[in-house]
Amino acid sequence: MRVILPSTTISDVARAAQVGVGTVSRVLNNHPAVHPDTRSRVLAVIEALGYQPNPHARRIAGGRSYTVSIMLPMVEAEFYTRLLTAMEETLSAQRYDSALFPLLGRARLERYLSSNRLAYQADGVIMVTYDLASLFEGGRLPTECPVVLVDGYSDRYDCAYVDNYLGGLLAGRAAAKYPGELYVLSLEDDPEGLFVNRIFQDRMRGLGDGLAEAGKRITANYLCALHYRGGQQAAERLFREAGRPCTVFAAADLLAVPVLEEAERQGWRVGRDIRVIGFDDQPWASAQGLTTVHQPVELLGQTAAQLLLERLDGLVGPARSVRFEPELVERRSTLG
Image (cartoon, rainbow, N blue to C red; front, side, top):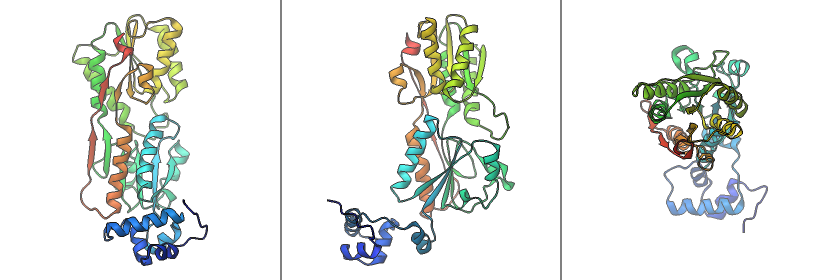
């Protein structure tokens, strides 16, 4: 039975575990110089007493805030929700908290172009999809703390990323096998020109090369925002202009769903009159029967967090990169 004492202190834990306060501190900081049996005993007491370390005291004692800043384009898209959950779980296991800083537009971006912003005062920074370092002199963020890029690549910082070009290439080769013309739903350009998003550029480049191998090309590219309504508007236009049979590549699964729904409303046979290929392999894609390019989202997030934790533990050396290869998963949206 867990008994929570509201005023439990680190001294209470040390006394109950029959160790010194310094030992408890080393356990909390995951220091290697603690015997496994002692570590287990201290952790058991921490759990039984419901002890919660004071982050301000930890900063004073160890010079750390035990906070990681995560800068990402948005939080509402399912891809980012999954990625964020995986990163937070990995960081939390080592007693680090996450502070989120969504990059939603020019006003927010400009707030982060100053070195005294809160986002740079954490123990480490994880930047998702966008590499804002290019906006600073010397191509580096205004912080001395470790930085990791996830869902993006840089030769300056540790990074974990999926080979989006390869994913597009696999989709292009698959699409080239089917009869009729090929239509694309891809992410519209950033109207403010703030961010360079190589993710969708690489997917489109791979798609084009995969089609070119078979002497085919894209008939029309419908640009849309990365949300359901954006895909719906593009799908409505597509069905007014496309003929049967045809194939549609949606640069994200989220954009593929409206195409499948519009096909049903229009009486088009999915897998015969229209074939649909997505990208991401969201958890619901299997139930939708969506052929899509699978990327290991959770593993991507876990790896990025682990790269940062290793730097926080004192690892030094040149920037590291972990590349994941996507896979094409064929389902009834192309198989008929």
